[in-house]
Length: 248
Length: 180
Length: 201
Image (cartoon, rainbow over all chains, first blue to last red; front, side, top):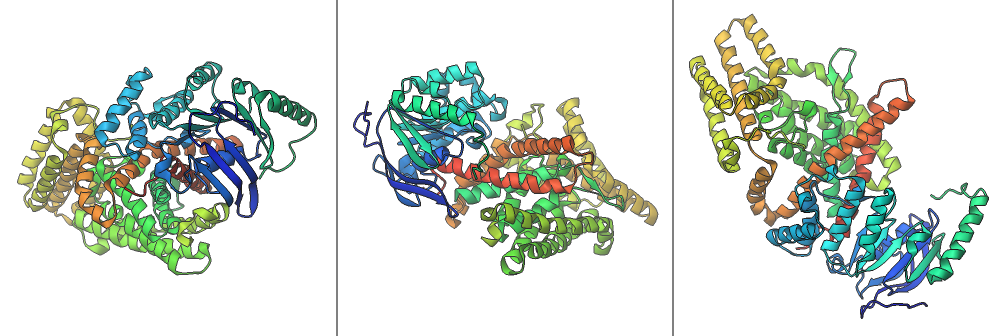
């Protein structure tokens, strides 16, 4: 098992023979992983189970068999303990934003962590100020562009200070300048990032890549070992008519 | 808990949105909106308790000043106007509709249709006509004359509530909480 | 934003919401007790002056909010014109218009946050029955956030309908709109769960 640059002393994310099935259909099976690196990429085709894998790590769903622990805690059981350990950025920001204004959206997670109204407000303002977006506080979230909403979601995860952040295709639907800005913001983060992506280039500087295929582990290792094999396989499938199988 | 809150809030929003779906004009020339269909669906889809709370949340927000009633009406003025009885009766209508679906274990479509008629038409008009009689200072039969023209439209909506609830159960079985 | 609060700032905006609601309750009871056209006429002039005192734009906005009442005023006019009880008709119509105008005045001059603060305070005793004021606040925020989102998506569905159909949008659109609300509710529940859920302290 590769272990390139472990993140301080924390026990990381551990899956033991984890599987997930929904109404009889197996989506993930037999996953044994110990994730400790700072930058981990998840690749795979559409319907390979990447998003379900991320939701399993985040504790939004519980494994059907086997176990998942994050920092020694079961993420599906102890939601409150998870808040400081792990945050997740959904693929679609509109599925993540709960509140009508930027300030309320940011303050929600902080209040969930036990801060009172005034403290949450103060921390929200400080965060917006630190990112040069103090003027956003009272804005309705609908006034933000897609890229700005994505950034708001990232800010609201960062506000809670988790040690690990899960990202589900953070660049989907963003224009190139926005992608570049977001890449920069992400690269500077001290947290552990676990990122789903379709773009092999986005994995530059990553410590480890996991390739899922039909809900199973196809490959797991360093970027220079996994990504070329993945790219070659995708090119091969692109030649064939590979789009006829129903994913659902 | 968060699932209940999310369903209740989104159905409160759904009632508002259905108030804006283009009006349908009946053969009798009476325009109807889908808003009371939204109230029926709260009961038939979410069940008595959650349906009641969803509609109560909607009515409370109307009172607080959100323009969520069909035609963009809202605010405290609604509770002084002749249609006050309908607005107050909305949560009770959803409750009764939901109760019928929960207790009467026939096909979901039939139960929803019956619930929508009992809650969304009978109970709702009891409240609505009483409110109108009080505000306009008229007798109960006179007030019922004023709203009688709308009853055929609401019977049609009860039929739609049956079809739609059944359709939702087919497409999202986990989401129809009234039979959960 | 989604609200009926008047964009014209008035001194009434600064009064506490609880005070305005109490005053409205008293005024409404007073209106119900008024039995003469004269008294109602005086009250009517007072209300019109109150609106005009905050500017013509404000008064015009207030007048527009009374528009949904015209069918009822027409019904009263026809009814009492036919029975000949003109005074009784005038009293009923006057009370109706004034009661609604006063209630609208409170709505127009009270921000949603102020109303919510009041509701949260009044709802505090309900915590004993399991309704936490925080859950209530989240539910309200969700409706404010997702009503425009659903409206927007319903609009897109109707456009998609028109793009492929020569017939007008009909009631069959309600099923996909409801389906969208259900799916959106699932996403919201998950988003709240991702940030700690709502149960517990």
